Image (cartoon, rainbow, N blue to C red; front, side, top):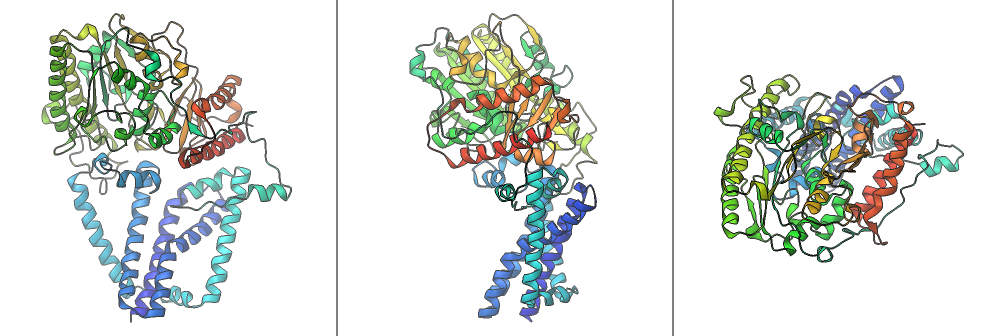
Length: 634
């Protein structure tokens, strides 16, 4: 009897996997050829999913152990759950379970960053119970004997599997070689698809590709050498102003209006408001990294590997600033305790991430931040205060008195809610939470004025990244480089500077140079960052760079070059600045020149020959992406 159930279990998982893959990948099909490829790819990937079960079946047939049979059933159920999780994750965020997700799940604070509601856990339990019942009934009663019988015919099975793999691998290899976007789009919808390429073999057989690149080559690799200067070489601060740095989770640029954020709107009207500002990432990790280091996102992995502090904070430490950083999330996820704040002492880092919702944690931390500001004023020493606000993070919680949009989704359960259908009500939750965030920011502004610190303190108000509400097809962030995910507010109170509205392109990359210049340092920003002083008379940014876990995107005033392998496969390689369609023929000569300039300057802070695993992987992804960009511009 156990043998019958084992065979049915394997057949069931193959059928479920095949149907899941086909139902999701069919949306990317654009013709008969891609349709046939989708079916073959689904067949092969379903085989990949059942490989662990085939190994357990072999062990069971050899040892006839009931415990192995039960282990096979548990594994089968886990595979189905992983399959569902993969496609739910991709539908929401545009990526599958991989390095990024594993990092999130295994790093302290990562799960907290998801903002999961209590209803999510209830739905997850119900789903698990449903899957168990479905699995038990299916294995016991569903008529899958024909497929089970195929598993016992080893010769036929081996021929079929080999043929399916050969066809799938050959089609994908040719598509990757010839830039067959319609086939690559289908492959991107197959969870955990294993790419097989054969560029060298095809070239030896006499097939030729179009020119790979736009006359440039990015063949650097090596250990990161940041910064070009060290804090000791800079000497003492000449203009020791205080710094209050306020970064809000998921705060996109259009939230800064008089209705949603009246306090911050009034603050911006009296200071420098950069209204065409870009984060350095479409997620928290690189959005924060870029504003403290002034480096592109692809440097994150080596900075983390080396536990290197940003030059700006090194300068403050060497000049005996009082230091305090507050977060309503965790400093461990992303790993800011090993990067940005790696030199901070434990008592200089305050995490308040539970209990309560994001707005409640922000309330506690704002009170403590204001207390710290008052203490610092009493000690008459220059101080640095950073706070990371969580109010605007999904699930977008807020108190009743901060409701400005009454038509909001009452219970935002990731598993049960139809996001597309309810997106307006979900966004209204976000607007209400941003309104509460504004009240906390207003308290900080008032405290600085009450303490007589306003004219001796630099104040920065910004977001780590934006948030999309399906304006371009996605919800949230960390998925693509559309404007909604990468545009953030940037308001700076710089003592002595008149109020201004700046409408040209600026970037998080410019923050370190702006602050170090304000503190009195005259060294060229190019020696320690990719940024510039935002207040320089000759400030001009021809392009900016935004990163994700998989690579960068180059943003010019006219176009976007998506160099992240994941984002380019799942969206587009080229687009207009506002995310419209753009063919390579529509690029200007200046756009192509800027791509060349970017490739040339990207390795500025890489020197030596020692390679780290992640930087080499980033480089490989970058080269593939540049190749794909170049092909599309021919």
